Length: 467
Image 1 (cartoon, helix red, strand yellow):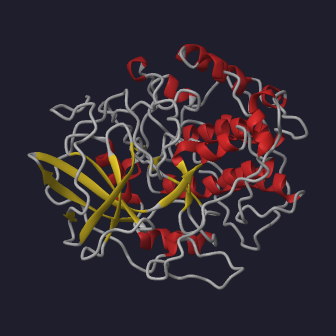
Image 2 (tube, rainbow, N blue to C red):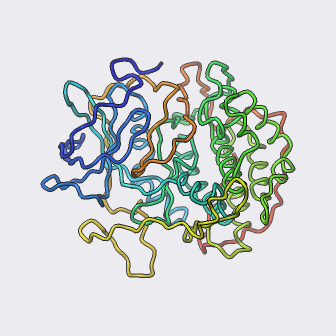
Image 3 (cartoon, one colour):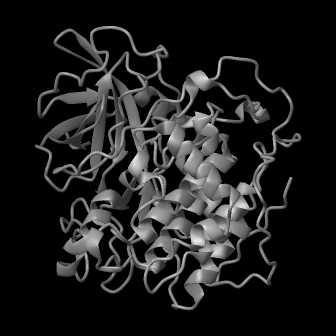
């Protein structure tokens, strides 16, 4: 149900600058300038140093919504259940990866102002979102960038999926560069995240036309078009569509975004006719072969099947091998091609990434010149491990408003608005997540050639057997 009450569908009344907020653990935060907003919430700079004004290069932000709204509550539950910093560090050590693209959560709480009740969440500050950079690059990324982003997002999604959640709204507007290290990329905005496998019991495959076409229309999965609860294969399908758009500059169905049924039909046709349906979209001087293989492998997954993340990642890493690019190396955004749809790129040779903050009192763990700063997820402080205190679960968000992204003003043009995936209140599948899944019978599985795994980061990736 949509949220009820005076705040329904409205942005909250702004909180005053320099207001002091106390989180559930008793830590105080001072509000700075407002730097952004979303469908339901506002975003402020913030600092734990409450005795002095918040500087423009503050390393924290606070997201604020009315208490009765649902998106921020859903995001909080994800961070408290699935994104504790000690768990993330253990995962990174296990997988031997340098950074995991999940923003650092610092705390949350409730506040009152002018008779209104607010919920707030404190996060690490992030930099530019990829949608803005994508447009500055003439709406096209170089192939190396696309494969780098795809491989990094696979690392992030594997962690999220192993912790019983799916993201459900992967897109460039929700991928943000690090503020202290702009060569890292983070998947933000978990307002539409969904617990697909609570306590080890995978949700059943069940089509529901009343919940059809959830998510951001051009990227959402075929399952979501049918009203099926989000799953791991849906996240990976969405990532595949994102990579196709980033490399080719467009998607086959982008002219029909006002007709969800037509978009669903076009996606089904593309997935049924792989790999040819993607290969014909090869941009000038490049190839979509890796994306075709990626999507073909995803299309062969059953609804509740655990993806072979290493196989999918290997497809992308093989594409990076010829260029000598490391998937976790620097992100060099520059013009991929100049054509009729991206003539603005003719004036762009390389997108300038924002400079990291130089203030020594706030820049921690700074490395000597020439070295890359450490991933922000390696912060030595163990974050809150508690559930919200006395917070009542709100109603879910309306289907007509997106969750605000953590980004710096000026804000980019909003992406097509996502729709809230309602919590499945019907019968749950009480069998194990490893039970026999629902299989798409209309899709032709593309067999990925098995080759010895080649390592490009000198860090071995553990193999996940198919369950």
